[in-house]
Length: 369
Image 1 (cartoon, rainbow, N blue to C red):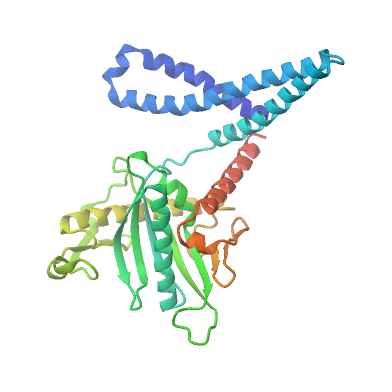
Image 2: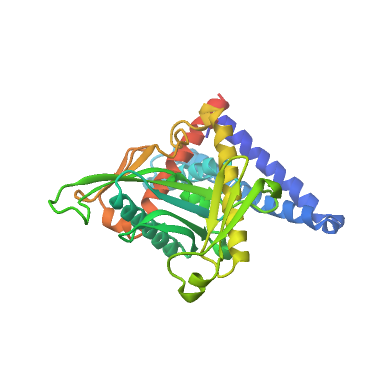
C-alpha cells in the first residue's frame, strides 16, 4: 500500500477515537443536530477504520507466515501451511486495498438523492420519439429491479406513441438507493441504429435522444428562488387522466425569468401538487446550470469519463441489428442489448462507476505525488 494512502487511513483511525470521545459526552445530546451529524460521520469513519484494522491484521499474518516459511526448514507439512496462509493473506490484502481506496475517494453529497431523468427526442423525427419511449421504459424497468419508485412528472407525447420530451422522478424510498449516484453518468447523447417501425424498405436509420439526470435538490440546501422571478401558468393537461384531467386547469408551467428555464408538471391530481413538483424540477435545472457553469471554468473537472458536460455529446450507441450496446467514454461494448432494454443495466452502470473511481484514484495519486 502506498504511503499516502496509509497516512490517510491512519487519520481515519485517529478521527474515530475523537468521535467516540465526543459522542460519549453527556452534553452532546442537548444539541440534536450536532449529535446526528457526528453520528453519521461516525458511521462512515468507523466503516473505513475497521477495514484498515483488518488490513493491518492481515499484514501481520502475512509477515508471520513468511517468517515461519524461513524457520521451518525441511518440514513439508509446515511449509505447506505457511504457503497456504501466505496465499490467503495476499489475496485478502489485495481485496482490502481496493476497498479502502474506494472508501477514500471524494463522495458526491448528491449521490444518495432522488433524481429527475429528462429524456428528449433529437434527430430522427418519429423514430427518435419512439426511442425516447424505449429509454424511458428501460430506466423504469431498472428502477423496478432496484426497488425504486418512479413517477412521470411531465410528458409531451408524439403521434406514434413516443415522447418528444418526458421527465420522470425516481426515488429510492426509505433505503435511499443512491438513485442519482447510479444514474448520473447517463447524461448525454444516446444514439440508436435500427430499422424503424415506419420504414417500408428495411433500411437501418440512425436517430438520437438526449438524457439529462439531475439530483433532486435538498430542500435545506436548495438555492433560494425569488418568487418575483417566476411566471406561473396553468393549463389543461393532456394525455391520460380521465375526466378530471380534461375539465380542470391543473397542469402547471413555471418559468424562471432571469434564466428562461422552464419546468412543468401535469401528472398530479391537483394544481397545488403539480406546482410543488414543477418547482422542484425547476430548482434542479437551475442548480444543474450553476453546476455546469462552475465545472466549465475548471476543465479538469470535465475531462475523461464525465466529458464536457454538453448534453449533445454522443456517449452511447444502441445497435439493434447487431444486438450491440456501446459506451464510447469507457470503450465498453456489450452484446446483450435486448436484456439492457429490459432494464438489465447493472453491468453497464457498474463499469461506469468503476471507471470513474479509477479516474479519481489516478487524480488522487497525482495530487499526492
